[in-house]
Image (cartoon, rainbow, N blue to C red; front, side, top):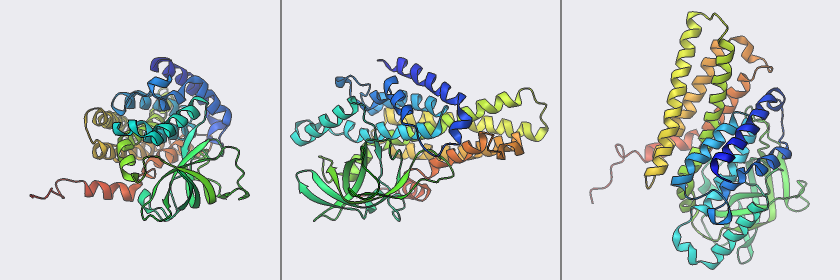
Length: 383
């Protein structure tokens, strides 16, 4: 399957999702059938390298088409798009590994097994965040006790496990026994009960104001089987190599929501004789929507051309997070009090786009990172 065909498939599915919008926006849970359809449509191919029949080549060549596809999917269902985006996001940890790992037997065996799981239709997600960490992956308090080789037993609390109950495997972090720093692990959660009978317990179901059906539950692990990433002791290196791509991917989902909100608002406004205030707000919303598109394009340009695009990606993501909230505010002002009704999609979209400012890195960590990487405020040492 080529990317154009895949994109057409996803646009078709997104269109069908959009026809069910009122029902979908009222949901508090995911439908596994949606993910079966997305797999059959070819969406999981983005998590597979070309040599295994997939569509992944490199961050520089694949990021833009992936983002285009997920931007289209988000126009149909925000929650499904965000959860599905976790799949290529976490798989990029293995797909962007350095060339020198090609001779590492353990790494190659692990990567081959992961590829096999994707071919078999398994979805990958993440349950990395921890209460009190502020979104900083280096501050994990979860622990992992080694049992054999890369096999461990993981203990700790995690939240924002997007796609819980639908994802087959979840990537997470923990501090291995005898070590001081956290590292990457993944856990197979297929058909695992949430009653702590096997070491996995549901702490709290997701009840967020936005992205209501992502099933981003909070979980507690107790001596739960986990596998350590074979490129050990490289938590930040792994995150940094994939960070620019992941930032673009999550942002593309939010941009897709804004695309659909603007389109829907335009269809409502066309036959109306709106006043001066509404005209000004609509024009401002159009301006900000244009800026959002330019910012996403700039993020993707950085990924395609820069050796380290992370600062430009974070600048774009932060700008789009703020602009998206502003656009939705203007649309709600323009359309009036009806947007407060649960029959209107705009109130749901308003809360959905706010997720971008809370996705990793969240606001506090995002601005701290931007300040710390500002060459004007932090010039390199002369020596």
